[in-house]
Amino acid sequence: MAPIAKQQAMPLSLPEYALKARESSRFKDSPSALQSLRFGFFGEVGGLLSSVKKAERDRLEDTQSEVAAEELGDALWYLVTTATSLGITPDDLGEWCLKELRRRFEENDRPPITPISFRQVDALINTRREDGSIIRSAQLGALAHAAGIFSNISDAQLRAGGPSQLVHFGNLLTELALSCASFNLHIEDVARDNLNKIKSRWPGEEPQFSPFFDPEGAFYDYEQLPRYLEMDFIERQGKDGTYVVQQLNGVFIGDRLTDNSNEPDDYRFHDVFHLAYVAYLGWSPVLRSLLKRKRKSNPSIDENEDGARAMIIEEGIATWIFNHAKRRNFYKGIEVGSLEYGLLKQIQSMVEGYEVYQCPLWQWELAILKGFEVFRKLRTDRSGTVVVDMLNHQLTFKSREKSNPPR
Image (cartoon, rainbow, N blue to C red; front, side):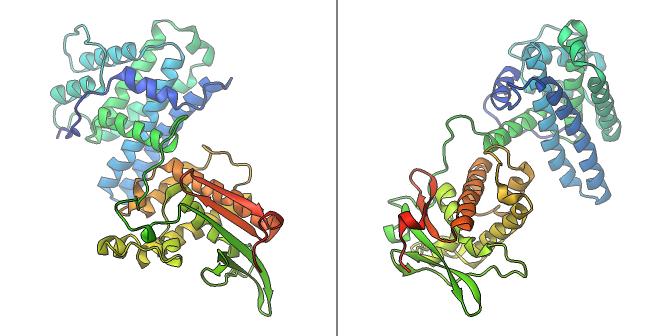
């Protein structure tokens, strides 16, 4: 059965994809860029085979296609980025792929229509393939074999260029396109989804934050999260141990917090993460409840977005990330753009169906890393003021000497 394509107004060309893929490359200035890109491609093919094996073991057919789409998209990114870094034009790459597909389908060659698009590749496969002619296991074996040959070619041989260079890359693109078809996927859809993934994770030099979920005009001002606030965190000693209280404009907010752990880890300061979600995501059901800013004028939003289940999910995310960070020195030294993709992807899956799901992964990364940056300062100073600036998407810390919070 031929795959059903997503409806798109304009075909995605290989030159357009290559340009956007190149813009997101983090290997541009690295002396080992070529090797990293090649190993990245090989790794994605290996990851594809591993994930398919697990899905087959668990008999999850839908999961196979979903996982394959992401892995194939990542492999495509590495392949196209490697090819263009060596001077192979996207149109030459696409032309060879079409030529090789026509050879395999025993069709006469013809001059290509440029710019070559992924839709041309999909159309050729869908019109010439017969039902059952692309056996998934055999096709994945062919892709793995081609990837193995590619990995054994030296950087010097690749840089030498010549006709064989284009042959290697054109054949790899052919195997990728046929592998997509073996999962009833179109390579154009895989490429588009990959670009969306890249944009969500690495947005470029001038990223645009998602709109607020409580914009002026849509909700009363008392239903909006404060666009600016200064929350005082004060650590105190009690007869039962150490705890933290919070004050906003001299008013206590929430309950006193302890670590709730057999081993002290300063989780008592964890509300800073909720403040970070406000600053960088414009979202926090927990803070809405604490500050009495729930959107009660809209019963559906009040119940579903600001209700108990949403708060439990937010607390769950904060706790899960905290445990992950604790094993990594609370993310000290981790730069923006370097947080594990799998972690961010898991968070996104946890908020699926909620308004914050529309926030891209890079916003989550900012909220997490900036939140832990302030958390580490709270751990050092033991008290201080956390400043939230929603309009400028900033979370900052003022030491107690500067902020002089009330006791």
